[in-house]
Amino acid sequence: MEKYRKLMKNLVDISAMVTQSTNFFEIKDKIVDKMLEVVEPTKACINLFYDNNFEHAYLVCSATLDYIPKLFPQNQRIGTKLDFKEAYPQYIHEAVEHKKIIYIEDIFESPKAIDERELAKMEGYKGRIVFPLLLNYNVIGFMTCFLTEEDSLEELDITFISSVVSLISLSIEITFDNEHTKELIDKLRESISNINEITTRLHINNDVNEFMDSLNSQAKKLTKSDEAFIVIDDLNYDYKIFSDMENRKKKKIDFQKILLKINEYDEDGNYVNDTKSMNADETEVQKNYMYYKLKDGNKLLGCILCSNNSNGYTEDDFNILELISKQAVLGMQLYKYNQSETKHKLIANELNILNKQQKLIMNESEMNLDNDKDLYFYHKPATVIGGDFYHAQVINENKVAYIIADVMGHGIVSNYIVAMIKGCFKTLCYNYQTAADIMNKLNQILYDEFDKMDVFTTCIVGIIDSKKNTLDISNAGHYCPIIIDNLGKKQCTEGTLCKKNVPLGVLEDINYEQSTISIKDSSMICMYTDGIIEIKNKYKEEFGIDRFESFLLKNYKLKKDDFINELKKELGQFVPKHNFDDDILVVCLSNK
Image (cartoon, rainbow, N blue to C red; front, side, top):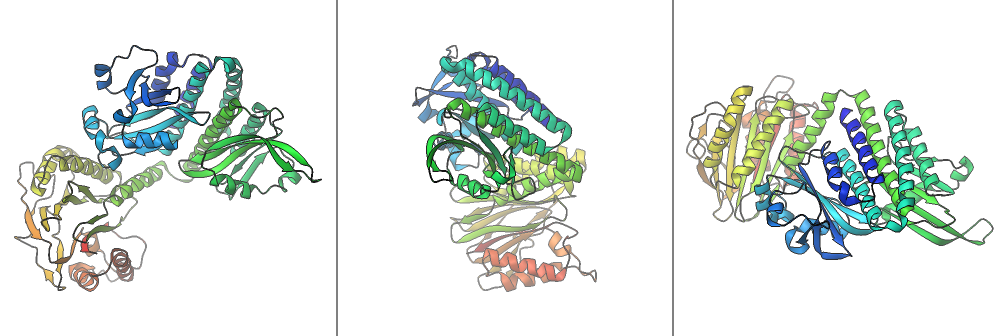
């Protein structure tokens, strides 16, 4: 929980900066620095729009890309003027237009970031996340965070940065709206002070009910509402209401219906004054209300609702409700992390996170190719994290490169090796065009690290050329692929069609070669790791290569989903148990 305490402490410090200053431009760099102390992005840039003019974005922070100060002077208070249309990629325009957070985890894979790749290479970042700055439902700017290959963002980090972005927006409002500055500062000081005290008690007592009740009381008091309640659709129960309303009044309100209705709204929150409603004696009355959604990414967790402010709600009230909602989500996440720690060992949580990352990495590699070819896979790890790995990378419009690796061992070490292989492979695909060159460079780059850790990996690197209908293969100690032609016959690939060499990390000075296979008349090319042929049934019999080949000859014409279902059924009948002794990975290149 040390990380979460740091997040809360720095959020408190940033809150103090905002409430104690009336000049955003004096504290902006301190806010960014304080934020970057506890999250992994290397840099973060704040950009502002002035007078609703979206032709130009003004860069107002110093923790920016290295080339900015060299090309543009930064001594002006309003910031460095940049052409918004020309200087920023497509996804930033989308974030501004739709007022939503957009996370590009890999600049070099996302089609929305094609124009940014040279800059990313030059500046040394891989990912970028955009947070719009909102004020009175209008976008007044945006903040982007840059992540290197080693950086990562969890949902808790994104929620924390969102809270900081909300505080930045408030600081800008304080600066640009002097008329209401004092009143807003007083409200914010009181709300932030109380919220920080409530959150501290959550850390100590781990009582989420007390936390939510206290937040609800603050929402009612600070917005001068007659009624306020928080509806939660999370935390291990269908829904729960936190309110100081009497139970008999609660029973008359359909909170589930309210939550479903709010989920239909596009905006995250809103306030409405002087709406008409009918009371119990059928007389028309006026009613003011305000709400803000509680969201974890795109998932709706609940909402905060306030009603019956006799003077009508203001933007200040809405800003306070937004701040309380962000804190409610952060508190819910901290509570769930606390609960998880008491039920599971820390290593189990880490392994689950790594397992999800590995699945995401491999899921990106299913592709539809030209000439009616499908590239897909089936993967079942033996433990939480497996040592088998597959990744495909588009080289150009005609070529796709892929890698299949079987890392010695399982767990965190194998996941670390997989991460290194993937990072190196993706980089090499941008610089080398043959399977042999990529394999040789992989061995050169990874040998020292593998030697220190006393590990190795079998590996196949292939390049599919859909224009020439060929497959180039370089083999480092791996099983050769099984090829079935259009007549349903198995072709022999051992020897000239698949020259096998020693695994990666065994010898430093070695030359890997490649073979070229025509795929014009091939119905299926199947690549696999040893897990599937070495699994044993209750009689200690191996599944074996003959049984696997018979399965392929019987099912090679099936479409992807049907093929995978039949494979699961076959394996389940052979070994009727949940876990296998080794990872299973099967990759198929087949006709549609």
